[in-house]
Length: 333
Image (cartoon, rainbow, N blue to C red):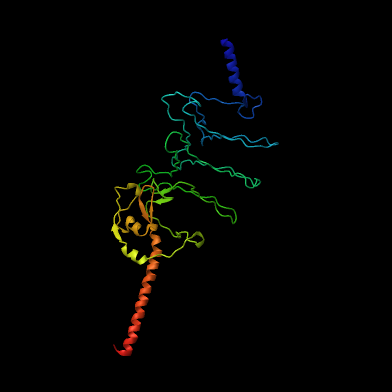
């Protein structure tokens, strides 16, 4: 029996070594190794290209199959899936670790740039049906079934490390969001943030856009004001008297008490929101945590109406002065 096993093993070794192609589950292999069926790995579970002894390292290509040419059909897909921490439907397991991860890591660069990771959806043909699906790229966080918050997606630009390489003062990598360009006179696509709040400089935004820091812009920040949007339009009442009750103040931010707000150390000028709210509640907004903000731009209509009221008073005073001046010229009294 041992002699037969040795002869079979020797024959398989010689045949595989001498053969151009090896087929498992097929008698007509078209590549060096063609497997008609599943492959299970055991042991170290590693697939890698052998180190090069002459030049550049070898590449590994994973490609799904094309449809049968005379008939056509859907192209093959590639699925990469890490394992669960217990079999599907399993119960009663203890000391469970986390589920498996999927890591995509490009090669490090030595005396050159490191490798890139490119994820690109397939090109859509000119013959695709109008209104059909796009070749989108979708990245979704995992669903959580037993905790109070769902998974996050973190996209981070590259960071610099070390003190001599790179030199001190080297900048970190950028995070670029760029919509696709249109063809010809077509417009570019949009960058859409469809729900939730967006925080810049803060991890706890309380508004649709919450910026903890300064804003520099060269265009316009315009409030919607078309008459077609509005109803029950009424004039402002007693703006002068209310404005006289406002109290402008200087102040400093409480940086230490509110580190997430990224307050600066400069002397500030403005109003106290609670005081403004008593006179002009339309100018004050309260966030989900109860903190108040003032929309200073909405003071403009109040100032305009105040100037108009003062101008009326000035005009009336000038009219009386002119009348007195004419009387004085006539009577000398």
